[in-house]
Length: 309
Image (cartoon, rainbow, N blue to C red; front, side, top):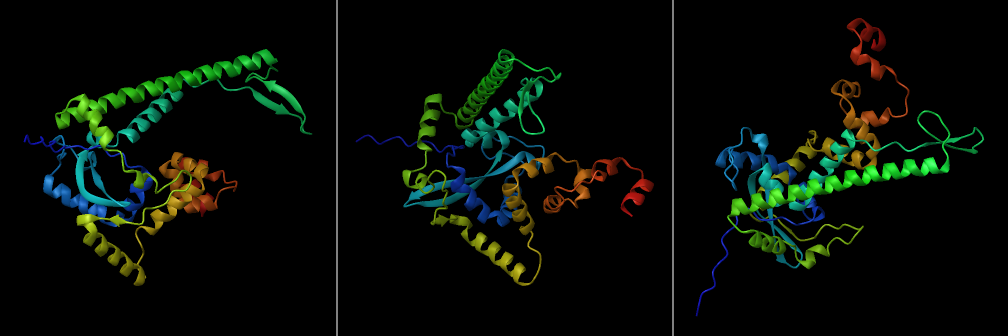
């Protein structure tokens, strides 16, 4: 009887687990990631464990969690790999293609902005006056339709170009996957199909109502996670500051105030210093008329002392 040839171990494996599955697990073990990353760097050095790329700095290497699905809704953390950014993007192919598409779209929108839509004007009593161009001329219905058609065509061209850039990036990542694992494109496509999580995992989070799977198994990292959580609990009981409390508050504030978070991200370091580099302090000052914020980074020392005492 002929023995079946075993499939060789892949240096890279696709990760198609949705973010609602892995993010809660990753957040629960967040305190221990820095120590595990340091241990991996000490063991392997500044080298990608998949392709052997020698990274110039530690920032060019990223930790990747390898998950498995034993069954019955269990998600198990098998190992953590030290990967270069290219290998990590190839592993998370779906997300990487989406990021590449978004980056290309933002660059195209900045280089070739779509025409602005006409301005709607109303009287003081709320009566609609019509549509006006940027130069202040009142537009006819045909001219308004031309403005909308031009904007729609420009936006369609940008989205088509972004989709093309995403597909090109996808092909580049697939070629890198084949090169690292020494496989053909057909074998790569087969690996992609095998990477689909089981149905019981996908059913854990119905659309619009994400739920965290109840059975989480951290595998060989279970003891390390328990020690980390115990140290963190002891720190809180002793009244010492929780180093992750500020990060959790900032993450919650970011979700509750997405518009203000975009403004906060656009501020310079000088502007953030005005709010003690704290997003929550920035939220407290929203709605206040304070022109000094936009002036004080460019004031002299004497003017600063006179303005802020």
